[in-house]
Structures are given as C-alpha cells and as structure tokens.
Image 1 (spheres, rainbow over the protein chains, first blue to last red):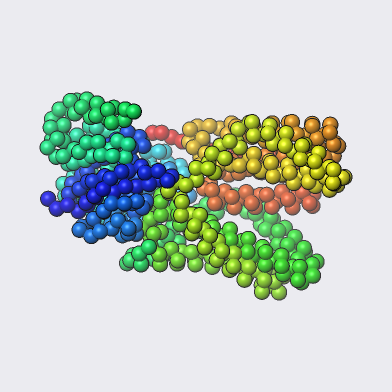
Image 2 (image 1 turned 120 degrees about the vertical axis):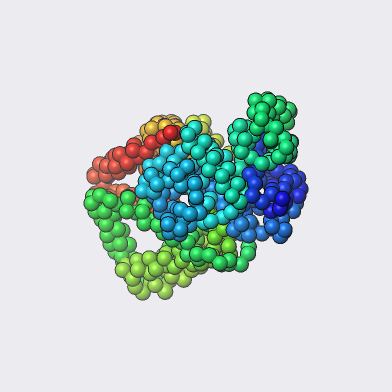
Length: 242
Length: 336
C-alpha cells in the first residue's frame, strides 16, 4: 500500500474562478482511482493540473514523496495523459501520431499490451485522423497516453464515444493492466464502471470532495451496483442542489 | 519552468512539421491546386519586386523593415500560441513545458521564417536584406516578450470579455447598429471632406465594420461541422449581421450621399463577406493556422486579379468558393 500521489488541500483556478477547492486525495501504487461528479464539478481541471496541463493555485502535491506543486513540467513528465479527442490533428494518420509521440510502432506495441487489441488499433494505423469517427479518435488518444511507456496514466472520461463492446474490452484491458502494476486515474460518469473496476475514488461537487469512495465501499458497490447507483445519485443531487 | 530532461528533443518540432507537410501535400494534391499556388506566388513576387524597384531605396527599405517587423511579430505570436496549445491540450505537453525544448522549438520555427524572408528579399531586391532581416528579428523578439504575457492566460481561460464581445458582434442587431453608425459618422465627416476623400473614408469605415461583423471563430465552425451543419448554413448564420449592415447602409448612403459612395460600401461589404465565407470553408477543412495561410494566399490571388483583370474577379471568387465548398462538403462527423 504505497501512496504515489498525495494531494493535500489543492485548489485550482480557471477564468479567475476557483474551480477546485481544498481537495485531499491519495492514490495507491498499482490501483485504479476514479473521479465522479457532475459536469463542471472540477474533475477535468483536477486531472489536468495533476498532469501538468494546469497550475495548482495552492496546496501540496507530492508524487513519489517529492513535492511538485509548482513544477508543471515534472508532473507532465510523470504521467501519461490522453489529450481531448477533438484536438488531434486531422492531417496525421494514426500510425504517425503514435510514432511521433512514442517512437517506432514496434516499440509502442509492448507498452500498450492488451490495449492494442481492445482498442482495435491495427485498423486505425493507416487511417487519417480527419477521417476518423469520434470513437476512433478516442481510441487513439487513449493509446497516446500509454505510447511513451508511462506506468502512471491519467484518462479523462475514456469511455466516452466508445461503442459498448469497445467500452467493455477497454475496461477489461485496463483492469488487467492495473492488476499488473499500472496506476490509473480516470474521470468517469459511469457508476457501474466505478463500482466494478475502480479500487478507490472520490466524488466531486462544486469543486469540493463530496464523498470519499474507499475500497470497502466499492467492494460493497460491486456486489449491489443498483443500490450503489441509487445512493450515489442521491448524493450527487444533494451536493449539486442550490 | 524546469530545465531540459532526457528525451527526444526535436519531437515537438517534428510533430508540427509533419502536420504542416501532410496538410500542404493534401491541399496541393491536384495539379490545378499546385498551378494556382505557383501562379499566386509568381504574381506576388513579381508585384512586390516591381513595386519595390520603383521606389527610392530609403522608402523601399523602411517598407521592408516594417514588413519584417510585422512578419516577425506574427510568426512569434503564432509559435507562442502553438506552444500554449501543446502545453494545455497536446500529447507532448511535457516537451512543451520544458524551457530548453520550448526555446529550441521557437528558434527552429523562427529560423525557418527568417530563411523564407531572406529568400523572398533576395528575389525582390537583395539590397533590402539589411532592412527586412533586422525588422524580422525585432518583430519576433517583441512578439516573444509580449506573447509571454498575453498567452499566459491560455488554459486559464481569461478570454471572457473577448468571447462576450465576439458573441455580441455576431448578433444581427450589431449589423443594424453598425449600419446606423456609418451614415451618421459620414454625415459628420462630410462637413470637412468631400468627393473622393469621403468615399475613401466610407470604404475604410465599411471595411472595419464588415471585418468586425464577420469575425470567424474556428472552434465554433468546427463544432457546427461536427454537429452536422452544412457549410452554407454556417456561413448564412455568420453573415446575418453583415447582410443587415449592407442591406441598410448601402441604400441609406445612396439616398443621403451619392450612388458611387453606396457602391463602395456595397462592394467592400461583399468583399468582407467573401473573406468570411472563405475562412469558414477553410476552417471546415484545415486547422486554424493552415486555414489562415491558405486564405491569405487566396486573398492575395483575388487582390492581384482585382488589380490586373477586374472583369475576371467575380469568376475567380466563385471558383475559389466552389473549390473550398467541394472539399469541405466531404467533412462529416461519425458518432459510431
């Protein structure tokens, strides 16, 4: 139970407004940490800041025991991160974007492991990104997060746009990789995935932690997903009520 | 910013270089596209050479110096914006946040701009190298320094006021307001200026109003394309303000001032609408930077045609729109 990410009272500002306030969280090495919350609750900002894409306004961010609150480049180097699918360049093919980020494709395949098949990447290699559907773009962005061989990866709503089969395969593949040592942080809207796949998590509401989801609670949730869903929705409603 | 960490140093540059190369190949894949581009380039070089050789050296040198500053400024601002994108949304954010790699990226693209400017200057008038290149370096430096301040807000989203203003300007009401302001301001100016001078002021006022009313937001065009909106529907929505402006301002100017002045108002408005249509169609096909580059080439072609063969201008304009529309029509968005 080795904590590799330790956030204490972190805050994030965007548009001059504080969108994440005094959030504490700890992520254990080799686990899947899920963030849930309403739209605009601060999930994406928190993940982006952790991955160096945004600055923290205050607090403490220790990664592997090293304070990195003010060091965006170090945070960006530490984590694999999937960029938003709609920002991928139309004028590159799937293979090109992967190779430009991760090196030769034969080097990238072992880093992706089961994701190669789960994401159906072979069929996307020679396709122009401009000709890809939203789901295809999403598959490429997920692969990009792993292309450089990171063992700590942050994915922002990775199941968006994917068809049910692809979403199922991806969840299985990610879970398998976590069991083999990957540390994964994801923002999610799907409570079912949170219940059955994640080891721990938090629920954000209005930039604050509204609920902590520890392993015991998630184990119970996995046994009775419907009850968990009902309870979580009630919490979300209460947290977002004016 | 941290110092450079081990890793592939030129990765960021190679990433954008490949995008630019692929986009250029795709844009000029057909022989007639290459022919148009080559013609525009030759025309532009010939026109610039002719104009600069006809001027006394000091005037030509100041022009080259000013152009160098503008080009350097634009280049460094574009590079800074691209770096901001990489650091916020790109897959190579770690590289884009590393100070040494940022510097290397900046120098590489600035050097390419400097080389192209040097080649251009050598072709049009070699003795102007002494003016254009220092101008470029000064412009690039100023752009870099000021860019560090203004780009700092990217990702932090400090563009609220600009977004609000753009949103208001795109409403039809803005066209009516602009159409009311133009004749009033011309009536005031007419107390001091007459004839051709007033027509020039009308042209400038119309151009400024038209350009403001036809601002194109590339992300908005992209979103509407994704949502399945056709090209002409997007253009029609964006043109409402400018259409109302010309629909009101031109008849009022014809009635109050002179038909010639109204004709200038109408022609200038149509030119801004044409520019807006070209930008909208180009944003459906390419990313913002490359689309702007293509539109600037096409605008150059239209200006050259207007000066050399004005009778052909409408046909060239229609041909350009048709060509862009044909390409953009292929853009679809699949949800599967």
